[in-house]
Structure formats: structure tokens, C-alpha cells
Image 1 (cartoon, rainbow, N blue to C red):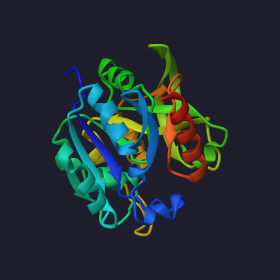
Image 2: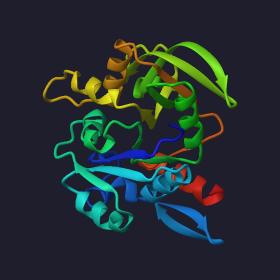
Image 3: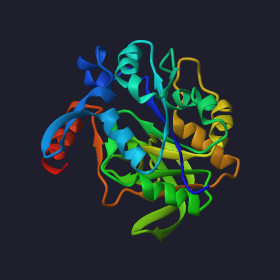
Image 4: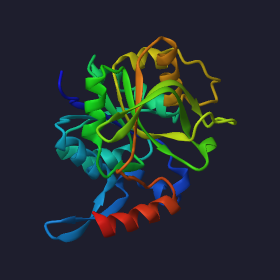
Length: 255
């Protein structure tokens, strides 16, 4: 295999940090101003995600939607023909990805959150995943407050195409005492082993199943997980007002 053809995009969250617009509109339909045919256009984040993926020959998409705004997204993307699956209750990022097991059908796949988009780098992550025969690959970036994020701990670092490549030995979700400042960005590639790992995650019925819990289970089973630094790429986050303003301004000036 020399490419990843499938992508799962999760868009079932409530988007509470972007109220009140997300009570009627999924986060991934929030626009960024980008240049198209010589002029600026307001393009929804979901289009930017899918367009970037198609550039590296991803040709099958699964959108995980919630029961509140799912219909709006389904109508908007109807002509692009993705597969839609429902997460009827917001049980977390990991639970949302688990809904796409039939779509993956034994193939490796990208996972992408709907609250941001990378300016570039999807091809480099895929190359790292394939050339290292990894079971999971993810992007990481250094942050000032690692307690707010999913964090990796690594056992070895080397260089890969001008990026730091880390061999991950543990992941933690919003740790009280972080062992590094390397936060996981919301773009991943997985082999289907992720699904069995997520099924083994046990949480309180009132708690959410985070994707990091599934990655941790994969590591416990001896699976190979690598992380690539985001050096040179920018994550355009639309998940909260301050980040959206920063991303909107950057996109207007640079894209």
C-alpha cells in the first residue's frame, strides 16, 4: 500500500465554546477567507479539510454527525457523496471514531476533527506512517499549558523530512502533571486495530471516551505509534472565539 484513501471527519460535538452560532451551525461550516481564482471567498472549514485530503488522493470520506445539526451538514455535502454515520449521544471523540468502523472496512484511515484544518502536511504524515509501518501516526505541537491537551511521552526522537519524529511510549488526556509539552493535534492516521482498542476502553457511563484512551490501549498492546512535529505547518483552529479570530486573520492574509 502506498497511500491512504479514507478519512473519517468527526462533527458530532456540541461546539459549546462557539455558542451561539453552533446551536444552529456545525463548527465545520464556519468559514475562513481564502483566495480562489484571484479573489477572496468564504470557504467552510469542511471544504478546506476535504480539498486538502483530495490533493493527496484521499477519495472516500466518512462524516460522523450528531442528531442536532447533522441534517444541515448532510444537505451541504450531499453532492460530494461522503458516507454519513450518526453519533446520537455526544460520548466523546473516541466514541465518534468508533462509529466509522464499518466505513474503514479493514483499511488504514485518517481521522480529522472538524474544528480546524492544517495549512499543509497531510502528505508528510501519510509518508511517515507508511514508511515506518506504524499502527498509528499523529501530529504534535509544543504548547505552553499542556494540562489542557492530550500529551505524548516518547522514548526516542529522530528526523524525518525536516521534522522531529517521536516514537511514542505513552499518551495522557489533560494530565495534572504532564511529562512533556508535546500536545496532540487533531489529525491522525490509524490502522483498524484502533477499533478493538477503543472497544476495550472502560469509562463511567457519564464520562466520554477520548481518542487518547484508544491510543493508550494500542500502546499497551505493543502497537507502534509515531508522532510528527508540526514544524512549518499551522493548525487553523475554529473551536473557540479567540482561536477562530486568529485563524480567520491568518487565512485572510496568507491563504
